[in-house]
Length: 437
Ligand code: ADP
Ligand code: ZN
Image 1 (cartoon, rainbow, N blue to C red):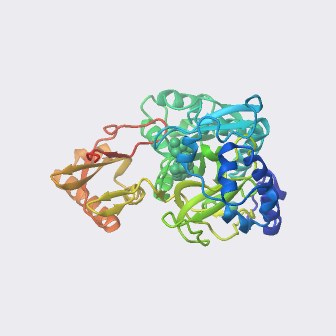
Image 2: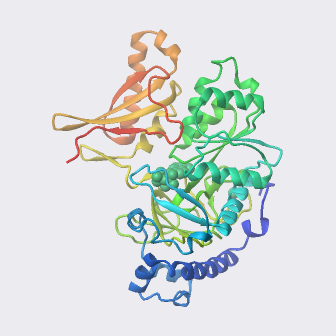
Image 3: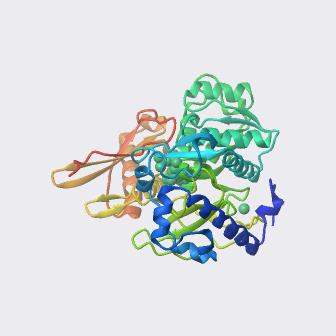
């Protein structure tokens, strides 16, 4: 056991039986709220749930049908609203990575509860009120910006609400205010690293010690790369707007995957094809139920994110179970000439090759009747000054590494840093130019 910091030790280290007692009580409350919405009234009565009392145990949650992103879209704008509009304090929406955005309502107590989860998450990484926090996540309807902003203020950090983009200004600001903690997408932090030194500001001019990285998939190798390049600790932060935003699950000081706040969410992992609930340790789709959101309760939401649940226990002493880093999305799998390939497999491999710099892109198109996969990677500039044969050897090495993981042989292109497009928020790693039929 290590000497870990807590925000709310009693809840964070509660016995399993206590957590489950809280979950059942809050689940009933959530059902009462949900039954006020046209969407759940219909969905729940169809399966014979007419009142919260029809759910007697946590096991009974399995009677509740899943909710999907399409359900949210179809019930736009108010089908899932459980309070009057005058009680809604804030509206957010998802970033729309995979289609039309969905809208989320928060009552005052919902914002309070969410903020509390973020304060807990922040303190769990060892950050304190002495830290200067530069929030590089996009503000606005996207939940990443305001979510962490409120959490950081609650902890008492010095908050710089700079938002996303404008790399030069980000670096200058980090220097001017001696920022110690940033919140950022991993791809953008890699980009920031690649720009250090350009305006005469180097790593040694900065006081950075921690980064909260999230909002997009990234591998353990990417985390290590970030930590080594910037000499910081990077903590994985997971959330989705449908379930409030960031603060669903967060890494603690142990950095061994993310605690799900189980007094605020019920996490299940299911087989995405059959809907069957899986056991701890088995990989599948994460399904989440809100326990403390009154304005828009969501039951058994299919996140499409692939992960597994650890059995209880962590060296920090927290009893809330952890989920693994997101291993992919059920909808981001590429099928290349019949072979299933997850972008995360590609990233995992290339990010551990030392010559590879900080950006890459996956491109798919058709050549004749066949699919063609091209992986474009940026490599460090000095390598371009060397012999052509060495470059060719490197290219070959990357092809071989990838083939070992994804079975097929992709084309690999080497690019100079800065050649591939950069996103200031969520990175767009895959460009699929195959004709849609
Ligand atoms: P959208 O689905 O439109 O991108 P959000 O902005 O709410 O909506 O993004 C939530 C999604 O972002 C998650 O479902 C997940 O796929 C991804 N995500 C968020 N945090 C992480 C993380 N730490 N690791 C991997 N993926 C993440
Ligand atoms: Zn822990």
